[in-house]
Image 1 (cartoon, helix red, strand yellow):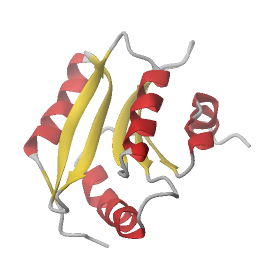
Image 2: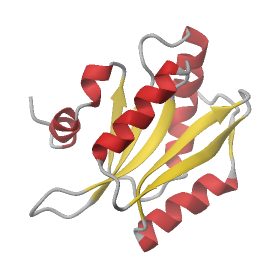
Image 3: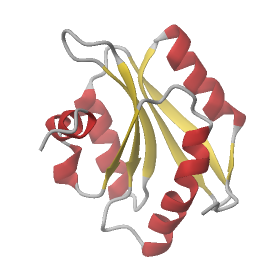
Length: 138
């Protein structure tokens, strides 16, 4: 389902910069005014998954979801870009629907994302959960 929400060019530019230059560890995006997806911020390479987790929790406390792209690296494996949809179960149903309905169209603009993870609960934000989902472990 296409929500009609457009993606700001800054989102694509930030993503392309992440892919090419690797200056950021993660990127954060949000739906602004129910009209468009905007690039919020990036975490520099010194940041880690816990920093991203804190940003996602902060968004939930503000009553909002997030899209994120995380440049995931594990020892002995090539880095991979993970698209994260953060829609906590506590969000207003209309907000959850907006994020879910816009996800595919937005993700399609991010050429190079290898994995997708949807997170609905704080317990699922754990880095080990992300690892299991990316590597399809139980």
